[in-house]
Image: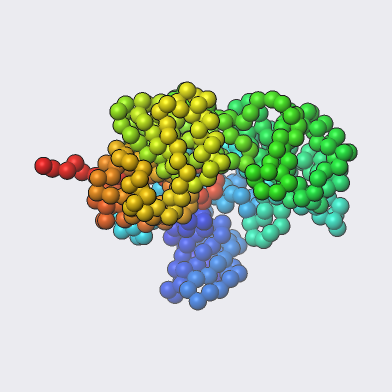
Length: 436
């Protein structure tokens, strides 16, 4: 069997070595370790392998906390110390900026990080009825394949949700639609926890009794979703507090439905919004754009400063939610929302937004390519860019710096998803003042 010394980690948390000019990605290996490995996939330019034995372990290696590590596809970095995870993500982020964007930040911000366990307040669990075993599985999918992992607990879910995995198996196993319920979406709010059941067939009257009893016993709210996310409706209890999360630093409460996008890690989101406002420095008298604003996660914090805010989002449903949140927080007088497809932005469509002194950009994984290409010479003098994809940020940063005249003042990582390889980041771009 081959043996190698791991050079670094890749963007999926796998160990990397180069053998005879070919990159080998090794599951379960950490930088500096000497390991025996087994290749399970060979391609012309790379190979994929699994660690068979760690001959010289890294000082950062720790025992995985979750008994399902290695089987469940949810967390790939539990064997790496939490602080070392953050450092590895920072290095990967810097390397991506340098190699893909050919750019360096003038300053590296201290990483944003927090508790490594029990942080995931949003999750989507798969459900599968296994006829041969006459049993139901509820959990994340296995690391390699489409099967649902046989999970009895989940360490990244809040304890009260982790404790529900086995009871949910029993509940669904007793339903007439146990083989017609492929997914459960979890959403934890300030005053209520919601579970959205994706039902391909309406539950029977007996099923409804079981669902109501389960919700009452576990202090939950069940939603039923017969088709797309917009069809989800509150089933039981029919009345009660809505889902929401707080941004205490800004005196803001955001309301949301369980199928609408919100950050999964409430604690880190609070720090991220605080960092974004520190970098953006919104002030009364300024007009600031919040691009890809969603339900207003950053918009209302900006508005609380006294600035006027234009929030732009492609989803009419999210814009309606955002407008409702602005009104609920008494900020509707400082906020304007528009529905626009920013992935198809042009110089003309961006100019139609009017003058913007500053801008915050928080796009999906694809980034904001067309938007940053469409900024004019008299566009925002300061941009805070929040990214969930280092390659997309590197690409867009190169355009902002080399084509649009901005400087990358600073950047750093945000560990929104501890124990996973997922890297979020925040960056500050500024245009030098125009000299007379």
